[in-house]
Image: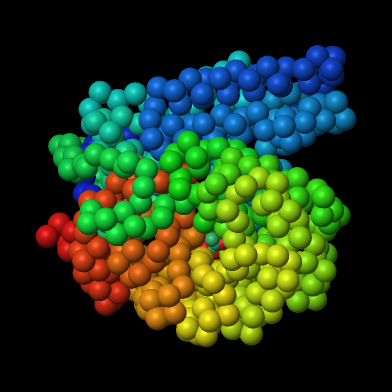
Length: 544
Ligand SMILES: C=C(OP(=O)(O)O)C(=O)O
Ligand SMILES: [Mg+2]
């Protein structure tokens, strides 16, 4: 017997026989050169349409988060920039269509990976679309989850979100992946399906076990040589009626994080009350020169338009050496996470910030969305004041800052006296609190948002929010964990913004308990010795 540790992303214990999920088609060959390049390039769009239609068809038969994820994957299959890049690879580089798609997707995935955080975790979605397209263009079947006749524990390197969305919770007792992070679609879907899951469980595949006991709360997987009798976790049904509140009516706005029109549509379809984070840098990841004010106005208006009458928090460009925007010409740095990034980029380029603020104000007027604007990576109250002055001069009505550095959290009161609101970016706040690069899988546990040190900083912000009567929200991926979302509310957070797919399960979980129970769960979590224990203690309070 051996025990593998990973990160528990969907709570519950289950045991049963192991089914290994084998991955990936082999890389398509770069030859032979197609006889007719135009005909070969012309095969790509119809294949993409078929893949998208299949995914949409599955989306229609699914519900809730599974539906939202399948819709996003379907949209990705027909992404115009991906398809044009693949067509160009056929016509310019004389590659067969399957190889061209493979290479175009690799480039797309590289851009997302370089952007880091939530975007980097979308890489698996791109690879899934790539595999489906390559399989169709090569006339072979897509690899995936094998059909099983006994309820089993699935163990895989990583699982495509579209495959996860299709899992039958009656047949899948638990899910274990060697890769993947707590914010991947796979994790989000496992939570929504109520399937206990552990990600980043290195060594789970190579153990070649016949049975496994999985603890999705503690993040452990016990691998054994014998096939175990299936034991399922008890599950709760998701019920959410569209307005975020605890069971005793304490309102917590449930919002979606967006970066594109597709995200905006998915957000509203999933019932978001607005957006707590519009990542504007996503509009310009490929731009080689600074987009003009008019171009920015148009790009922002397209994302804001579906939110007419609803609140949207627009974040100014969050770029730096780890999230490169080619037009910014930021120097390479030895330690990009600690470098010139976020608002710091604007200190030397105030004109860049002013042009963006003007474009955001115009886009808000064009669309009727109720827009607030916040700055990323603020460290001091003086930086907050500098930003607030420029934003107000540009005509922004509500100005905020992100709290992503421990320095900002420690000066929460002073920070909030400069601005109207703050939004906690738990993805970065976690990495800076534990000094653990969020891009490094081996440090996933230190980046677990259940780390009590991180929760203590959130508690300080909750107190400052009450004292200053200025709302504090969370827009990091911590908000998408249904149990943690309630704990954050218990710590005094007024809004939670997350990936759209997580909204139904977060909404349902929040509404299961009154605020005083969430407060007790939060007290227990904050005083725990580690992340796993914080999660267990909070769960124990709720289980009564
Ligand atoms: C929301 C956040 O910003 P990003 O993930 O874009 O860095 C965060 O750091 O939590
Ligand atoms: Mg951040």
